Length: 129
Image 1 (cartoon, helix red, strand yellow):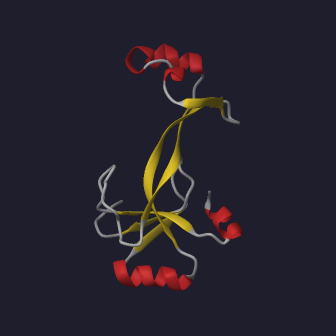
Image 2 (cartoon, one colour; image 1 turned 45 degrees about the vertical axis):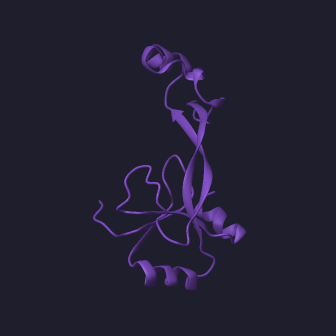
Image 3 (cartoon, helix red, strand yellow; image 1 turned 60 degrees about the vertical axis):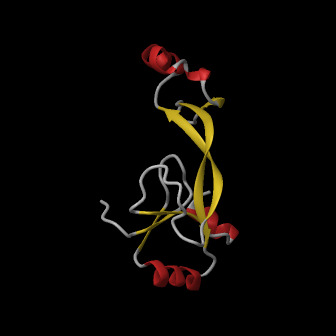
C-alpha cells in the first residue's frame, strides 16, 4: 500500500519507528503502535542463472529459499521471504497527527523504502541523516 492508496481508501496506516532504533528493535516505538506482519520480497536485478553462478555456493540457489519465485515487470528475479513484523499506527485525521507531534515531537513522514511501499513515520528522537 502506498501513500496514494492510503488517501483513496481513507485508511491512513503508517509504519512507525524511532530514529534511535537499531535494526530489528523489539520495543514498540510508541504506545499507540501495534505490530503487524508485512510481506518481505527479495528482488535482485539479475537473472536466476546469474544469481546462482555468483551466490549459490555461499547462499544456496535462488529457488532454495523463499516462495512465490517470479519475475518483475523489469525482468528482475523476485521471491517472497518470511514476513517482517513491523509496528504500525493508524492516523485518520490531521488532529491525530497533531496529537502525535505534541506527544513525541518532530516527526519525519516519507513514502517508505524500496522494499516496502507503506508510508513511514519516524519519531525524530536521535540524529539521523
